[in-house]
Length: 511
Image (tube, rainbow, N blue to C red; front, top):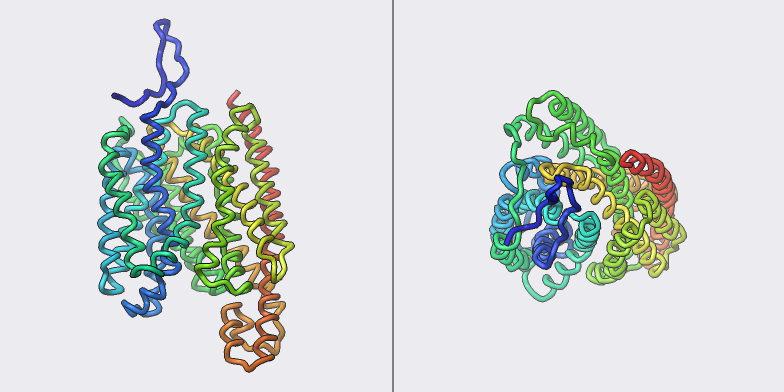
C-alpha cells in the first residue's frame, strides 16, 4: 500500500484535486504525535526533578544550569541544520535516527551517575529533538495533501505541541514523588520503541529529489547565530540587562547577518531564499515569532504567581496549570472548521491574536488572590495562540514546496524559539522594572531585586516584619505582572491588525 500522491492527472492532462488521506495516514499521524509530545515535554520535564538530581549527583551551580538549559540550547541551535538535512537524506530516515538517539540518550540520562554524564545525555536529547520536530511536520506535509485535511492535522499538531510543555512538568512531579528522578527520562522509551516499530510501516519516505550539495559552512554559522541570541535573551529576565548578555545577543546577530549573506550568495544554501517568496511564508514566519513572544512572555509570570504569590507547592502549581490546557485541545479543531467554512484565514489569525490579547487584558486585572482569574487568562491566551499557530503553520507549509518541507518547518520552529526567548526578555524586564520600582527603599537589597529574594529575606525576619515584607513583595510582583500584561496586550493587538492587513494581501495575491 502506497501513500497518497500530491495530486493526480486525468487523461486530458488537467490536474485534479489532491488525494484525500485515509485511515492509514491518520494512524500515522497518531504515531507522529508521540515524538512531538515527548520533545515538547522534555522542555519542562526537569522542573520538579532538579532538587532530587541535585541531592543525588551534587552538581555545581554552573552544572545545574547546564543540566536544565543544554537541551533547549542544542535543540534551538540545530533545528535549521536538521530540517535541511531531512530534506536531503529523507525525513523518515532522519526521524527514525533521531528516535533511536533520543531513546538511547533517555536511557543514559536515567542512569547517569555524574553531572557531566547527565549534561552530555541532555545534549544528545537536544540533538534528537532537533531531528524529530522538523521531520514530523515535513512528513505531515507529505501525508496530508488535501488542504482541509492538512489544516485539521496541523491543528492537532499545534495542540499537542502546546499541551506537552504543561504536561511535562506535571508528569515529572508525579514520577519524582513516587519513583526516582531517572523515571522522568524512562517514560520516553516505550514511545520511541513504538515509533521505531511502526514508523517504517506507516510513514512514507519523502525527500528533495535534487537537493544539491550540503553547505557545511552554514552549520557553524547557524549555531553561532542562534545560540548566543537565545542564551542572552533567556538570561536577561532573571539577571537584568547585564553587559555580557547584551554582548551575547549582539554577537549572535552579527553571525546571523553572516548566515543570511551566505544563504543569499551560496550555490546550495541551507535555507534557500526562494522559500521566502512563497505566498504568505515570510508573513507567517514573522507572525509566528510574535505569537511565541506573547505565549512564553506570560508563562514566566503565571508560574511564579501560582507558587510565590499564592503559595502553592510546585506540584500543586503544575496541576492547576493543567486546567487552561483543556481549552487548547478544542481551539485547534474549531479553528480548522472556521477556515473550512469559508472564514478568511487573515480574519481567523487576527481573531486569534485578539483572543490572546484579551487573555493579557484579564491578567492585567489580577490581584494577589486571583487564582481563577489568572487561570482563565492563561487559558484564553493559550487558545488564541493555538488559533494563530495552527493557521500560520498551515499557511507556511502550504506555501513551501513539498521538497523543502523540513527546511520550512525548522524555520518556523526556530522563529518560535526566538519569539519565546524575546517575550521572556522584554516582558520579564518590564515586570522586573515595575517590581523594583514598587518595592520600598527600606526593604533588604535581595528583596528589591526579585520576588524569590523577598521570600528568602522574609523567612529570616521575625513575625510581623517578615509578613509585611512578604505582602509588599507579592503586591509588587503582581503589579509587575499587570504592567507586563498591558504591554503584551498592546503588542498582540498590533499583531492582530498586522495579520489582518498582511494576510489579506496574501490571500489577494493567491487569487
